[in-house]
Image (cartoon, rainbow over all chains, first blue to last red; front, side, top):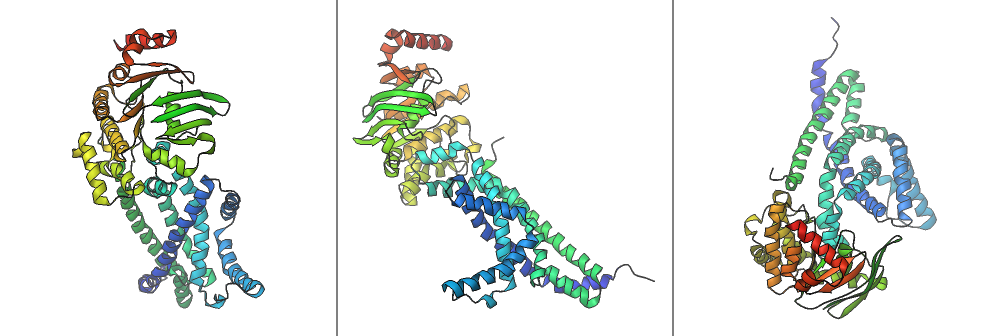
Length: 239
Length: 247
């Protein structure tokens, strides 16, 4: 009798696939953290209309939104070593950087940070702008510096507003990391492909890997709900 | 102590303040009355540069700031020397009652936490909110929020308190509590400048009443004199009509 699925192959492939989970999570979490800084910096550049930089920011955001992530990953992977090499030869800078020692994981992290940073830029900008003007005025009126005002009053409130959006982007990023296999990173997807071609059981390994992503995303969603509740605790009125 | 000279404010082509001169002495309580759109709030906000005056000078404690050349440190000095109470309270939503009062002391004055807390507790006691220290603004009534607003403004021990229609967004039954709090602060001898629509209150609390219309000070004087025998017909009209509506 012909079997639709080799269930035992699916089960056996789990441990090997899961051993690559740290790579997937590492790239997703790492790029999320880095891109928060990129997003914040570019959002502030836009809000304060910093000359020159705000034009560069607009082009950056527009380019990232207008090109496929896959292409961006290739650009980073093939472009950055070339640029570094060129700078070393022509200008004698960055000599301590050894192009060959940069791992594919590092390129993946860079590509995802650059990509996500552009998307977060808009999210963070609109979140900051959604904070009530009175909050800015009250902070100024007691004599806070712009930095104090932002860090103590505005960012915490903006972050609360942005959490649902940031969460959705984080979940998308987790799933998008499945693209990194193309530059040689063996993440859960990469491991699944390897297993699949070894056992000629592609359907089975893709079922296994989709279950891994699915559960991971469910767990993250749960955590996000909790985080949002915690962040919004000050909004709950007496009701 | 505060001296405003020839303050002008334009929003684009709209001339909102048309040359205001005003002197306020130490310990004096001055109310600014006038119809909506007369520029009362704008004038108040020009004193701490929440609105930058287009021209004119603001002098506080013999330090003169010229609107056209005001630097960051000058503006900062004005802001720390004044405390402002807003119509919409504008309490920091992400901070508790205690933190709202403390944050200026710890961040702007850079006091130690214990010291800031001690001062803040004292002030919150005065406005009667010692039992709400860990509440967030959203968990308070409007009246309570505004009393925290007053406490926050007082925390930095400013030379002068600026009240921008402090009771205008309150439910009628909450107004009295806030007015009583303002009164108790006035009785301590704080210098205060109050923009308000509460005429009876202005009459009771003020040493001087200023009547504004159309970006100008029309008339000023002692409260009883203003309410009973205002010189200008327009002032009379305004105060009379408002009196009638209060009855």
